Length: 310
Image 1 (tube, rainbow, N blue to C red):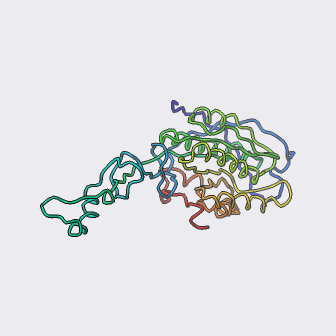
Image 2 (cartoon, rainbow, N blue to C red):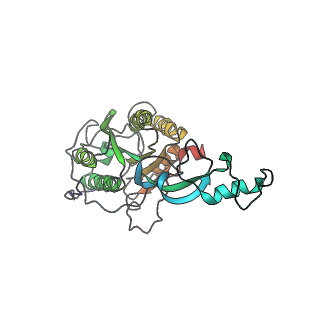
Image 3 (tube, rainbow, N blue to C red):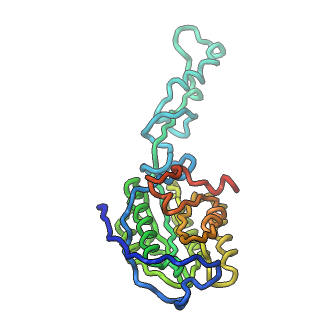
């Protein structure tokens, strides 16, 4: 896909945050829908990667065992030997030379001595975006900035050869706006036309994402996912929405899904709800400003893997 710079969104005032469970947009009907706003200009984002060592398709995001790349070590071969690690093989064979009756200069090597060279490169991941499109995100300036941030991450995903997917939530439910695909253009198009308004079914968004990832693990088990939740962290609608969102977050953590929460909260009074959600997910929270590559905040190299803390 070709990198396109969408128009800037209109200016406007961001609403002050309200407690979870309060109406999303004071003075508006809870189910009211606002027209889509244009994305702000995209920017170069910081590196987000899945921790550990994967074995997925070649790409430019997370560390992975690959057939090509730099040699990082040796292991016993599993199946056919494809790349001999000579030094490790000699080291494995050397202690047994007397027992094997070595009588000359040559080294007696057995099959058990052979060592496969392990190589490390980069893999592409499945980056699944879960975007809050509720009324609490609906101020024009704020939603324009949010869309600009997601578009920036989409362009980054294109350059790193990732698959991407898009789940949105607003009103009473969550929708798979775009099933996982290699088409970043399609994701950008769905993002641009995204309407906003209504309550914040955060738990529904996380559960829908869980369903999407479950199916994708069956389809492509070697491609590791990175969950990117874009929200101010509020949860409204239904009985005990905060507890429901927490339970949904812990489902992802239990399965070891790497996650990052892009904190979209604005205003002078900050409730820190996105940070709480990141803790439930076992992941990391970053603000929109910290997402920029030229931000003074530290580089986000690895999103905390949920399973490591569980």
